[in-house]
Length: 283
Ligand code: PAF
Image (tube, rainbow, N blue to C red; front, side):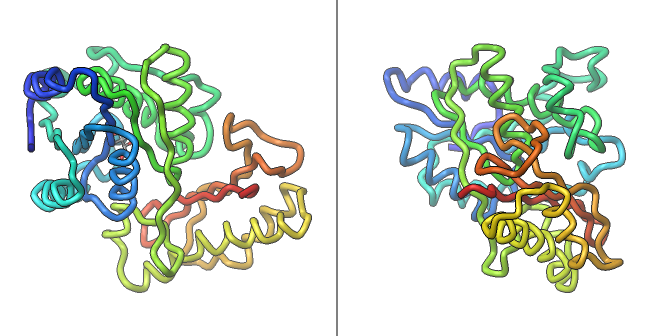
């Protein structure tokens, strides 16, 4: 069922008394990564809702909101084939009302703590995680899921959403699913669509750097600067590295030495497309 209004979702949701409901929040342009979340949701829950909403308030003014791929017909077909019960695809007007400026002057926002936001992607994407938490909480309130499914690819997002759920006592269990990669190692992302064939090859550097860090850690190197330094031989003038960090995977805290709770995270621009990836060192 493809639904566009909050009322319709609420009405359908009410019929599911006593059943467990899973929500997979997405911005559409669904790929195998999203399908793995949907599969997990189907295994875990009686009913599954997928939201498809390119959320304007999580994009900065110079980001790709306008050109972000919108493929709702294809997304709906994929969801139907995967056995999704409801695809919720609201308009910005349905989510945020009409005629009001989308800012925290006029709208109630959820602002995750500075400690979690002032690093990694949050450093350059000011306000991004406020926009993410705000829309995710709205989607939770609309769909009232028991479980919600997020990918490890957006590791900082997943940590911040867990923190929001804990701090605000939201009765939703967050399930995180592993990154899905192309055979080449490239982490799947809707933004890979912006890359040329050459760009896709250059983008392999992200996973190569992360795999190499993990290999070095497995050999016993725990010094974080030494691990990070192994990256530089991979980078060329076609790579614009934004960050490479090794942090605690649960808290995003800095560590004295890498350990089995460490995560290595990278953001790098290739052909001016901002790509992110990460790897757990301990698994
Ligand atoms: O990860 C995403 O696709 C988005 O940030 C999310 C969680 C759907 C919120 O818009």
